[in-house]
Image (tube, rainbow, N blue to C red):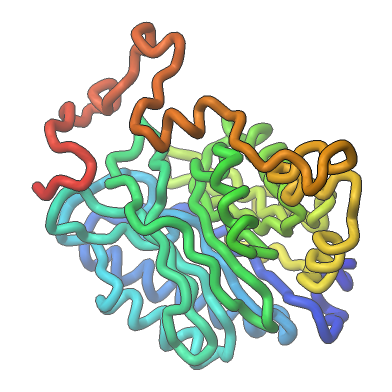
Length: 333
C-alpha cells in the first residue's frame, strides 16, 4: 500500500511528507523571519528527499513556537511576507505545502490558521482552527467552517488543527463534505501521545478516510513536542509512524484515494460514514434518516448544555493567565 514510503509511487497514489519540525523560539520579528527561512529550506529538503512527494506538511506552530504570544509584531496575514515566502517555496520546488500561521485579527484575538498552497503558489485551502485547546490557547474560534478542496493528483483534501481532532464531529464533517485525506497538524506535547494515536486511527476508520497527522518535535527549553508523524489508512491501520522523535525528520507514505472511493462505494458492513445516516437499512427502506441525537438538536438550537454544566471549573482562560473575556462570539473588539 505505502510503496516503501512513496519510493514506488502508483499512478493513483498521493505521496505525503510530514515534517517533524524542530520546535522553535520566536519572540521577535527577526526570529519570525529566521523561522520562515527555515521552513522554506525544509520545503526544499522535502523535494530533494523524495522526488515523488506530492505534498509536504508542516505542524501547527511551525512558524511561531508554543509560547502563545499574541504580540501583534509577530502575527501574520494571509498576504504577508511569510506566506509569500511559502508560496515561492512551493513554486520553486514544484510541490504542494501545508503551513501554519498565527493570523492577526483586527477585531479580536488572533486566529490559528492553516494554509494549503499548490505547486503554482496558489492558496487552495484556508482554514481557521475551530476548537482552540482551551484554556491554554487564546486563539479566536474559527468562523469559516471546514473547507474541502481538490488536492494533488485529484484527491479530496481537508485540514483540521490539533485539538480539532479530539472531536469526532470534525473528522465526520470532513468526510461528509467528501474528504478522502484529512490532514491534522499539531503542536502537542508527550502527555497527549496515546490519545493522539488512537484518535488519528479512529478518525480514519470511522469515516473511511486517510488521516495524515504531525506534531512539532524536540524542545524549546521549556516545552517538549513529540513529533509522532502518523499516516493512517482508511481501515484504521497505521501506514507510517515517526516514533523516534527525531527533529526535522520527514515521515513519508503513499496513500490511495481511489481505494478510499472504492471502499466507500462497495463496503457494506463498517461503511460507517454511510450507515450513520441510514440506520437499520436492512429492516426499513433506506434506513432511518432522522436525527435521534439530543446533543445535535440542542447545539443547533443554541441550547447545548451538559447535565454537569454547573459543576465545571474551567470555563475561561484565567487559570492559564488570560483575562476572562467579555466579548461574545461574532462581536468585534
